[in-house]
Length: 326
Image (tube, rainbow, N blue to C red; front, side, top):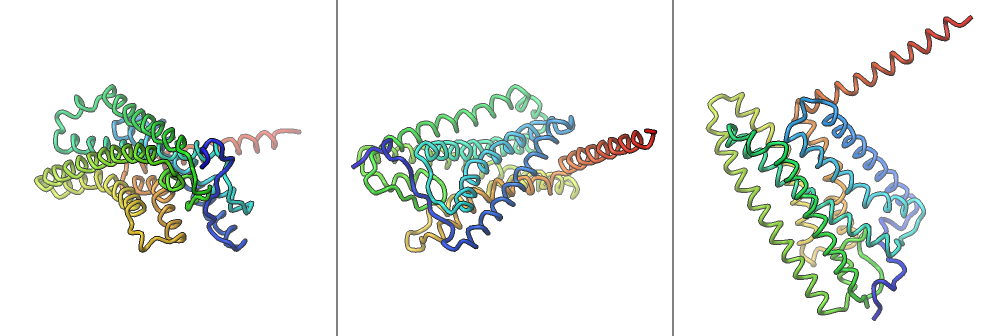
């Protein structure tokens, strides 16, 4: 039996044994990460610069983009590094940091999605009270609560997990340091029970948020169906469908990854499912919101047009200066 703190490194699961496939995974992850960085960066810049997006939904969308960037930057760079250099190791402290930040950003994102559901509920079901219930102070407090709850739970979860003695080796059946896979290496009964208690508490919290989301959308759809005009119903649905799609993508992939039957479990399937819930949602969230949010699309195109126009003017100035020189 060895304490986890004395273990110098962990072994991660490789995507492939063949060098060609490893390089293919590297380029694929590079494309996904660059697309996610660009898309989330555009949303952050658009929300920050365009006053039309200085709304509660814009504020929460900005926070959501930060969590998406955090999720991508936590898992993908190390996976790219391992695929490029044909290694499978991660240091002990690197594993601790990766596990902590992954849980932190994923939980913060889930809590933010729950708050955004409340935003849609108030906007559609109680529009006259929207300014009162979702003022700037209330939005800041709710966002801070989401970040703080994710941080505190991740701190407890990670500290308890890495305090357990490990007696099952150091090979993780995952391409990043995920807490359930680290727990499989533990041989401490009391510590495992303590960690199980934390997981039960988190499951109850996640399920409570899920029930709140379902209840809110039942009320939202009932209110939308009572709108007399078809244009009004379409506008209301268009503001809700992106959020519903993001929530469904995150919950479906995460639930299947953690609750899939052991009979269908295999290293290749585990890799695919883990990528689906840890990499795909943060990369697709900006696209989902941008396709259905006309104000956001207008702000992004306006910002891009201004940048291109400014670059064109600067180039023209440089050329005219050169032509004027003797």
